[in-house]
Length: 173
Image (cartoon, rainbow, N blue to C red):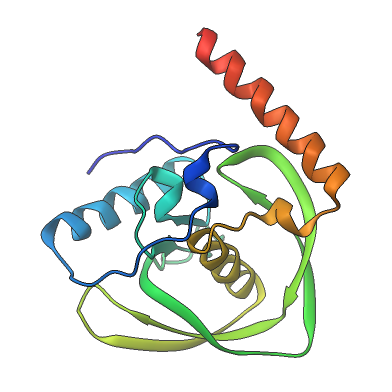
């Protein structure tokens, strides 16, 4: 397993719609393991393929925050929301591709998601709370959408400028 570098906004790959997974290969299984290791190392609760330069519809997540609880790593390929509650929830979101920037985003409070698992089987589950926010955030990544796209143009521009400055500083090191 390898910790992969996480792309930082603005990177054009973060704004592209990803291709569906058509075949579960050993390379894809290895990439999923790398993504989980990268997510845990960051640390984060979710990570989508394009954030590590993998332009396929794959995401990983684990929203178990209690250090005493057993982790629940999940790998979702070709995920799609099949139902969303009318009731919404506002959560302060952050993103591993937009480090140290946070903003309130309102999304459906609960969602039902169908996806292809590494076992090649179709799965479906209803998510609430942080799990619902996370899975919607990561599916947005697969569609080339970032959480800052929900903000006003001025806030989005301010965050983008901060990320450009961060990338310049990192390039000097």
